[in-house]
Amino acid sequence: DTEVTQTPKHLVMGMTNKKSLKCEQHMGHRAMYWYKQKAKKPPELMFVYSYEKLSINESVPSRFSPECPNSSLLNLHLHALQPEDSALYLCASSQESVHEKLFFGSGTQLSVL
Amino acid sequence: KQEVTQIPAALSVPEGENLVLNCSFTDSAIYNLQWFRQDPGKGLTSLLLIQSSQREQTSGRLNASLDKSSGRSTLYIAASQPGDSATYLCAVRFVGTYKYIFGTGTRLKVLA
Image (cartoon, rainbow over all chains, first blue to last red; front, side):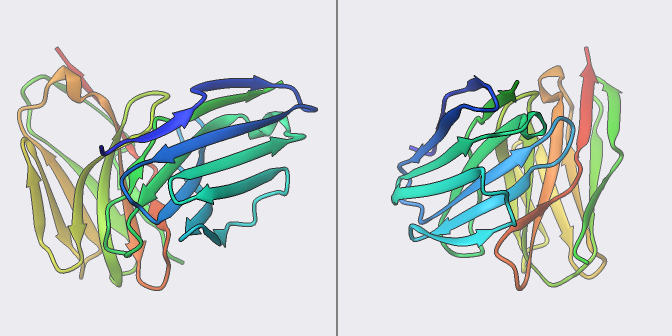
């Protein structure tokens, strides 16, 4: 199994809503990542979890709240988002070593109205 | 500042052509470089990973080379097909940082 699974695939939410994005992998990877990608731009790193602990936070606004309940799951909780937060949110995972390949999920296309 | 750039930004070629995509990076101290393919609105698919100690990697019709000293990598696609149409991204993991830094991508269209 070499897949990273993200749900939902599409999400539309209002600025007062609370929603969560979910990511799951069963490759035994101990590093998991959230990226944000705007149209026709490269992915931008948001968060990195290493061994279920937050190791990198790229100065992301607090309306985005990551959570890593166990080594296979990664969530991104969304609250009071702005229309400019509309983007493709990508989850990725890898082995802990810096020499290892990054595996991406298919993403959640988020629209904030 | 550690940066990754890709040229050209867009490329359109007839089916069957061999083509080369370029990736440049500003610091030769890297752990590795990874090439990805992305279809519109989809996630990234890993194509090839080259470690800093390697010169090239091959997978099927794809060949990626790495010249660390000059800060360059190329992705060679042989006998291009319409199904190769996508955006190709390179990402570099610089020494001293855990994260990959992505280039802006090359949008490839292969015409039937």
